[in-house]
Image (cartoon, rainbow, N blue to C red; front, side, top):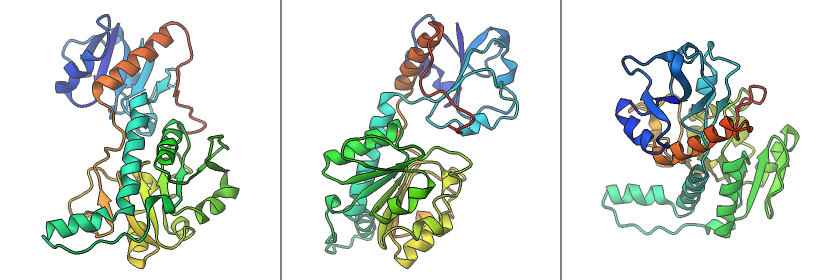
Length: 309
């Protein structure tokens, strides 16, 4: 079977191919002489609109990351072809590691110490609280959110969660739906956004929501860039409503060099790196899902247009 890749550039194809079994013929999206009629699977990140519709025998489309909203936005996307999110176990583990690091960085004032190091200034840093003294609230309790919650609990940090439907995670207070959002926010000292990209979550991390957090709360944004209103976040930092933020996602990306987030003393900027597994890890996961599809089984993490993820 032929699988085409549009993620990481043509030079990344050998790395992708190394993770698939030998019976899968892995090709570059724009390989000269490639017959579109022979392509059965596609792994893509930023496909040109209309291109996926040019593969008439396509059995499934895989996003090369957990988010597929940019793929689903293609007006010519073949609706009969399953669109599947790439969420291997390693992605949840890496996300949990990143969020734990971010929460601890806020607690230990890592940004302040980094600025002092850059200035070669030896000044006492006395963090006002221990990480376990503040409750982390996770917006989005899917596979990554649940795994992250358990890892934070392993550090002794209290965790609560908010999602569309109520979740049952031992030790995690679960809030669900719009009616319970305010109560969730009122008891959240560090807000972690792990929501999927949907029409409802666009622009959600903005002044009205931030105002409902306890004064001096922290923010860890690892969802999608379109979910945040960056000027509102910076204004909340300047006013003291937020005490610090770790931002991994932006719109646009890359973050422009003149964006004030780069130099804001309350912001740690990371380049959309929170949970991306290696290509080999993702290839192994996708190969396993393809095997399920070939057996006629329902794949995990199937994109649902009604939910938006």
